[in-house]
Image 1 (tube, rainbow, N blue to C red):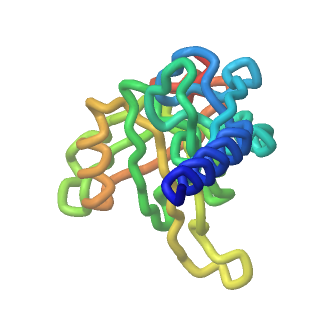
Image 2 (cartoon, rainbow, N blue to C red):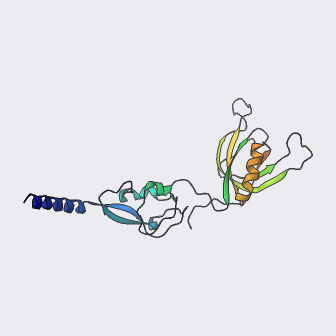
Image 3 (cartoon, helix red, strand yellow):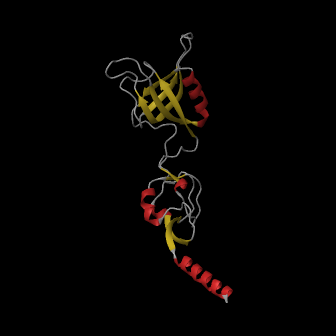
Amino acid sequence: MILILLGAAGSALIAVNSGNRSDYVAIANDLGPGHKLDRKDLSRGDLAGATGSLIPWSEAEKYLGQYTTTKLYKDQFVTPDNFTADKPIPAGGALVGLSLEGGRAPSDGISVGDIVSVIRVPAANQDSSPATPLVTAAEVTASSGAIADARTNANTTLNVTVLVPTEKATAVAAAAAAKTLVLTKLNPATKPEVSRTDGDG
């Protein structure tokens, strides 16, 4: 009799748990990494029991416009780690950080979204060497600091990140480390060698 009662209690518990279902965010169609999330990319699925860190359907809106971090498959339930607010680095591109001092960039500064030419100039003991364009047109993706302090006019440091072709990244990084780089600002309509993608495709 005790076993029967326990069995009945267990069955009742299972019945309660199976009825306690919640809606979570799932993927409507296969998506590649770096895809910009749109409403049509999401579907609703219900689950019961332990769901870990799956995204509740009620929070789906806040992930629209973010980017997938990995390949996602149709009907897959997702977690916050599957998305990022940062724009992806496009195929064939690399981000390189540059630290520039006075005379190495326009004095009025360089801002995110500016298009610049990346030029290697001779070192102080190589005045006879010609300047060499390393990247004809590169997009600036981050910028902080300034060439000169606005109040004292003292020389300071401008730190920028540029998006360059992968095959040119090593040369740009080496010239940056050697402090032989100069940036010139180009017309905003200039097409960069590598364009930052919105991940729409």
